[in-house]
Length: 379
Image (cartoon, rainbow, N blue to C red):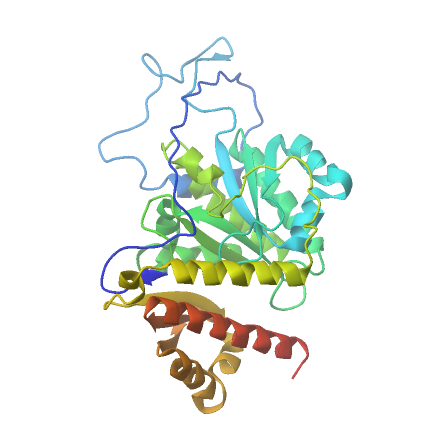
């Protein structure tokens, strides 16, 4: 959410910048050559990266000089490449496998470090755990993406949408990468869609920092999704030398979350009723603790989110009665508008005093879930 009238932005927890140690990795030559497709993706990702008037050098004085089949120290950490994926419960379970067998196999096959946030530790506004992957090069990261897409597409009740044979995979991008991928007026993301055949939409950033997370939702056939996510990854990897990159990769934006969990954890022993009661008590506690100057700030607050176009009718209600009812109960203003470059999604904006805005959001999410259930039942 963000305050209207000033540029402040909120995220789910304090953002921590941890200084990253400088690691020098000496790598031997003779690795597998990049494929033409991978080279093309890397070239597109590096486009406009080199400052004008400067070129990469080799030979004398170059840090990448080769001699006799050996390589001088390269300023790249052993696990330089990183990506973050959103994993709903079925995908998370499939990635882990029985007794952790699948994730152990993936680590060996992809030469990757893989981990999931704890059970119940979700990315804000989703029910998804965060799957974090680190590899030594883009080739192995592409292999991680291929395997993740394969597992997701085989998970019948996973993160799927659209026509039969199509799937969806969501990844997290740092704001610096997302801006380039979208391009001016959405030109670059449209080109990406045309190249890969996948539908790609990118959410607004949750904060103004360069490493603020943005959710990229990629849907289509498994082949199209894999191709598009590889291009997104290629752009992300051009930023892995930035000082903030290790912090972005290890951050979950979820309170109490840990980016790496080596083995599956047991589910919570609390019943759903106990969990609901605890959540409500937390909400009441936070609301009561808010000082008056926060609750009654005259500038008001605004909260925005994306909703599927197919459920907008249920949110609005017949002749707008649904929105009118929530507005009347909370004293807020609610607007839903189409998104120009994503016909499958609409943007919903709620504005008003802080507590009223949050109350309206909860009521609208109830309408959203009710509409979703009715759609599943075919009513």
